[in-house]
Image (cartoon, rainbow, N blue to C red):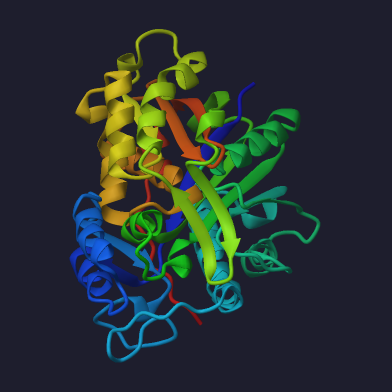
Length: 375
């Protein structure tokens, strides 16, 4: 018996960032050095991102000023405490909205949920968003809750493994996995190339999956994990005084290209191109390019990954679920295989092989974006 993703729900905040407008905002910062003025437009223009969503209305150049941007267009860098205060306020509605969407699409009653697994690396608070999910959606107060914190972009996979273990050990289990990331809380003007790249690709969003032992959906067949130790210093995520600090060196795409074939080999029964859909976490355009080249994949196999990068950017842990949802939006045959994978600090490669099961798969999995109205 294999666990199955019965439905995927998504949520994004209502403020949309136009990539060109945000590029010009960061390029115009008065303290930006000569190198930064050269790197910023190049990074933004090469990102393959057209627009993203953010919880920070003041990050939108067309919006009202606030703590992150003043009326003169100068970006400010609030303390980590101030940023985390915004997380505590703004993250729970995203968690709840994506969870509600997933449950509605699965046809499950909230009272049927037995386990909740939440995922986030962009803020900390207790009581956490898991309790907001329980209270606002009417889950039983006896529901088991587990949080996967600060693991980065690959964290949906440990969460799905946990969900699969629950479902496979108890056929009556209904597991709700909810990933929500407010990545834009940690942007700041900088001459540092790693921070500039982060500014150019990260967005905010949430995605949730309902996992049960059986039923139509995406059957979770196999998981794989690989650590590339030489990449530990090239991709990292640390807490600084002015937000969380991303280390994302230009060596990462090369490392991905050199290791991804070996990392996913345990999931394959033949050539990678035999799998029609690859839900690759779009950490950036170069990572998608290197993955596609290393595995000799046709453009169609990567279409959903590139579409999510274009329309949402990199939303850390939630992103791979957006890619899976987009793939089913585009259409997939019953019985078709999917390989999903993501990269994160370590350098860690997490991956899974899934199979589409049941004629209602596309209807259940696919979901339009949901704009969240904050109270």
